Image (cartoon, rainbow, N blue to C red):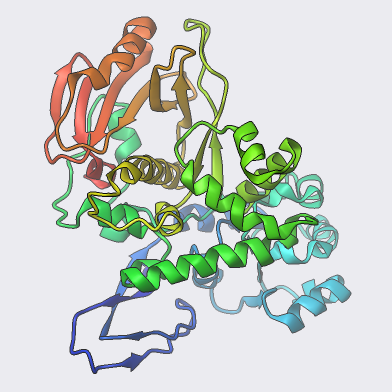
Length: 445
C-alpha cells in the first residue's frame, strides 16, 4: 500500500442523494460529509520518503506544517505496526502529557507518535532525557501545527537529536500524480513540459492544496476556510505565545490577505489597525510560526546596487487567501484580485516543491529602489540564479523580461534563465535564457 493521503472526490449525482461517509483507519481521518456522491482518490505524499529515511538515523523526527495539511494521516502511515499514537488534541491525553510527561513517554521499546506536540512543551526535556539514555534511532515521531523552533525549549534541548521535516498542503504534483522535476529542469536551462490539464487556472488557484478543502464545492470550501482561520486565531495561537489581544488576529489576517504578494508595510498596517508596529510584527511572526504566512526576503548581491530591503508577504495557501478575499473564479470584476492570488499560488507551489527536494534553492524576491521587480529569485548554494516573473495574462509582453534581462547581463553565467509564468498554453522562447511558460509547468514532466 503506498504512503498516501486518502480523500473524497465529488462526482455529480442526483440532488436527493446523500451519503454520509465515516472514514477512519491508519491512512484516513474521521470525516463526516454530505455530498451528492463520493469516490476515493489516493494522493502520494512526496515528503514521506524523506521522513522515513530520517527515522533510520535520528532519534526524534519532527514533522511540522499547517493544521489540516495531512500530518496526522501521514504520521500514522509512516509509524508502522506496533507504534503508539497519541494526539494532544484529545483532552485526556493532553492532561496526561502535562501532568505526567515522564509517564506519558514511557512506551517501552515501541515507537511513540505524538501529534500536536506544541500543545505540551512539558514533554521536551523528558524526551531529551529518554533519547540521551537510549540512542536508538526512530524512537519518536512528533508532529506540530507550529514551527517548533518558535518554542525555545525545543530549539535548545533537541539540537542534534531531532530531524525537522515540513509537510505543507498538497502540491499540484501530488494532486495530479506527477513527479517533482521543476527545480532540476529550470537549473538545467530547461522548462518542464506542461501537463494536459483541463482545469481552469482560476479554479486551481482558488482551491489551494489543503486535502479536505480540495474536495469541497465552492460555497462549502469558503466556509471551511473561514472556520480554519477562526481556529487559528482563537486556538492555535495560544499554543506558541501569550497574546493579550488574540481577538485582533482575524482583522490582521484579513488585512494581510488584501496585501498578499505585496511588500510588507508594517507602518501602513499599524495605521489601519491602530496597533503598535512592534505588536503587529510580533503577531505576524506568530502567523509565520503557524505556517499561515511567510515573509519572502529581498535578494541582494554585491554586483547590483540600490536594491530595496523590504520583504514581501505571502500566504502559504492561495485557497485561504481566495476565501478571505471572497474571490470568485472567472469573475471579470475581480480580475485585479487574481494577479496577486496567482503570485501567491506560485510561491506556495515553489515552497511545496522545496519541502521535498533534497537540495532546494532559496527563494527571494527582487525590487530595486527605482521600482523594478522580479517576483521570485531562486538561488542555489553555488549562487546560480533562476528568475521567475508571474503574470495573470494569456498574452506575453516582451517588456516583462526587461528587469530579468538586466539581471542576466549583470550576472553573466551565474544567471541560468529567466522565466515568465503566464496563463497561456505555450512555451515561447524570447531571448537568450529568456522563456515564457504556462503556470502548469510547475507540475509538468
